Amino acid sequence: LCAALLALPALGMAEAAVPPSAGDLVTFGSYPLGFGEDLSPIEWVVLGVQDDCALLVSRYVLDCRPLNKTMELTLNWMNSGLRSWLTGTFYDAAFDDEEKAAIIPAGDLGRVFLLSGEEVASCFQEDHRGCVPTDYAQTQGITPAENGCCSYWTRDPGALPGQGNVVEADGRNGYRDAFKQLGVRPAILVKPDALQVVPAGSAKVAEASDGSPDALLAM
Image (cartoon, rainbow, N blue to C red; front, side, top):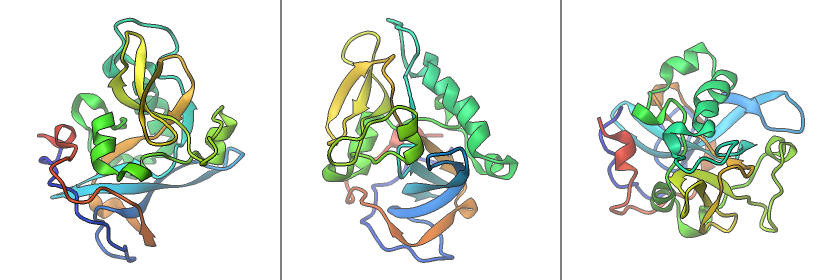
């Protein structure tokens, strides 16, 4: 793991063949993005880079899954079905052996995980916390809101047992029963030299502040 990320820098425009920095868009791995099963490169938003570690979250909601298929009153991220799916089925489907070697396990969170609600709030400007689903995610059950975005899970627990925390389509914080089918927006830690920066690609991340996903990246 990396040491704790420093405050996120202001957004800048990315260029090809340069090391990634916060706000850049990069490609890494592949997954169905259209209406069929054909694989396409996954675009990720770089949330921060320190030393030999980059924190990424998918640019789009990639799939539609429940946090857990059954109602469990003691549900948390560690025993959730979604964690098992991300670190197993999704991990194997999205990354080849070379890409897997570049992924840095995030401790108990797993090789692929979700951001917490606080991390989403600290990493994205308020009006950019909503996320657009891919066509494939829509075929799996997601219906976008009028703004084109959809609700997606964080790894936080909900307000009541058996619930999970979500980022709503308008970017607000919310809670849903864990068995509901909602958006999945994966996050990973990756060696920066394995990433391909998208030319002229950029995303709205938070301006420099004291808020950063420190707990994710502690040694």
